[in-house]
Structures are given as structure tokens and as C-alpha cells.
Image 1 (cartoon, rainbow, N blue to C red):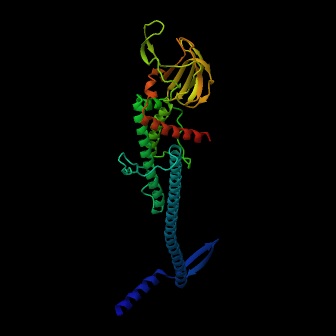
Image 2: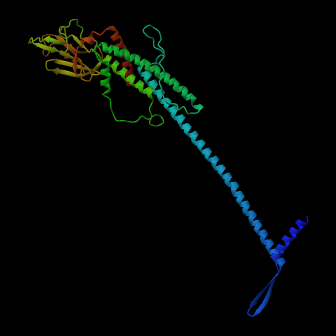
Image 3: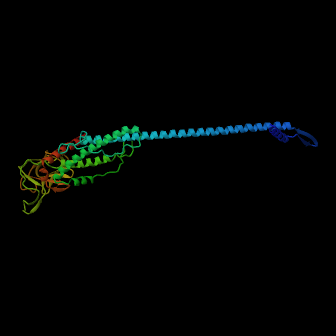
Length: 398
């Protein structure tokens, strides 16, 4: 206790030593004045100054502490605001992606419905019976990419819709390929090259490139399944329309063929000559009918042929009817198979009343006999194709 008291006494003595009475002499114009500053007054002033400094230090520390606290709060608020903005951006992006996906699926469904109605009238069956009557398994669904696998679970309903579309597209593709295969066999039996027909038809397409835009207004593609379907439908369309265009109906109701296609002796000179068609002899005025549906592109006279009618059946197939005695049609008319277009005669380079009948494929004469003598199974496939093409034309006209 004594050492502590001694220490306090020494401290007071040191502090007291700092404050001594002071006398200040002030001389003004020869007058001297004394200003006395006592130690007590000095101590009071020092105490006041110390108190002020202490208060200022306290206030400064409080301000610094408040700034530290508020800066932390501001940083926390800013972090929360940034997180909220990021969350809103993710939600907006998610909604946009869901909306875009839904629009894409709707666009795909519209296209599927259009193709199905146009080419089949009803949804194709899930399985197609084979030759033995057993059902063939449904083909695997085609790969598409409408649904992003990173989408949240809320998008699973859209994923289920996509799966249904994939299955539908697979059934439609299988049905299209089956019909195209039948048409390909029938076309080959008629002596035509199916691959060449499809290739030539594909070379005749073109036009400016206009990117496809879906319901969302964005440049879009419907996916590989639709590209496969489009290619299969184009192939089926070319082959079936070729079958419909093939002139398989007899151009005149007569039984005898007086001259066949190919090499023969010229009836006027006896020299070897090429006969580009088939001759059907018959009474003068016998009705001449269109061998297939088409559009009349020529009515008039041609050198050596006399009076001629030409009918364009599409797919590069044209029929020529020559040596006629009269016409029953005009250029531009659409004629059906079996519709009368002229009368049999003997005009031009002819030895008697008959019909000279030609079939030209892309401008080259081919033997009409291969078409007129088509087998029953080929005619059956052709009849099915005619019904579909006719229904498609009727729906397009509405």
C-alpha cells in the first residue's frame, strides 16, 4: 500500500510541477503591467482542454464505429440486391426459355399435323403389318433437341410433350418410308429409275435463302427428325406423282396394235426407220382419250404427225396423240384419265386411219408398252397414289 501511495504522490508532484505560477510583464508605451497566471487556473484550463479532446476523440471513435457498421450493412444490402437481381434474371431467362420451347413444340406439332393430314388423313398407326400379318415393332424415336436438360423440373411437362412428338414423328416417318418403298418398286417395274427421278426432281429446286422464324420470331430449325421427314416426304411425293403421271390407260378402245415401238420398215419407203410410238388402227372418228390426267399443252399440226394433241402429265412425262381427224380440247385444259381429247384420223404421214401414240420422258421417247401393260399390283399402288395426290390437290385448292 505504501509503495502505491508513494507512486501516486510522485505522479501528483510531477503533474503539479508542470503547472507553476507565472508572471508575465507587459510593457505598453512605457507602462508596465503584470499578468499573473496561477497554477490552479492552468490546471483548470488543461482540464477543460483535456475534457474537450476526450469528447472529440469519443465522438470521432463513435463516427468511425458507425461508419464501419453502416458500411457492412450497406455491403450486405448491396449483396442481397445483387442476388435478387441475379435471381430475377435467371427467372426471366427461364421463362423466356420455357416460352420459346413451348412455341417451338407448338410449331412442330402444327407441322406434324399438317403432314399427317395432307398425306394420310389420319395419324399413322404405331406398327405396320408385314407380309405375314405380324406387326412390325415401332421404330425408335428420332433424336430432337427442343428441351434443354438443364431446365428445372417445372419443364418436365414440355419434355413429355416432346417425347410424344418424337414417337409421332417416328411413326409418320415409318409410314412415309413404307409408302415410298411401294411406289419405288412400282416405278422400277415400269422400267423407270426411281433414284434418277428423285435426283432430277431435287435439282429443280431453289429460291432465295430466307431463314425460318418460328412463333417467337427467332431464327429456328425444327430439328433432325423434321429434316428426315421432309426428305422422306419429298421422295414419296416424287415417286407417287410419277406413278400418277404414268399413262397406263389405253388411249383408244381398239384391240390391235399395227406397229410397235422401235425399229421398223418405213411404210412409205421400206427403209429401216425408228418408230417413236405405238400405232392403234381403228375406224375414222374413234374417240381418243387421255391416257393419264394432265394439262393440254399443244393442239395443232406437226410435220409428219398431222393433227396432234400433247398432254403434260408432270414429272417430265408427256403423251402425244397424232394423225387425228378432229380435236375435243384446247390448250390449257386440265383433262382426266379417260377423258376424250380428239378423234382418230389419218392426217399427216399416214397410210390409213389410226392413232400414233407416243410417251416422252424428259423429251426422250420411251416405249409406251411398259406403261400400258403394267401389272395389277403396280396399278393398285398407282390407284392408291392417285387417291392421295387427288386428295392433296383438293385440300390445296380449298
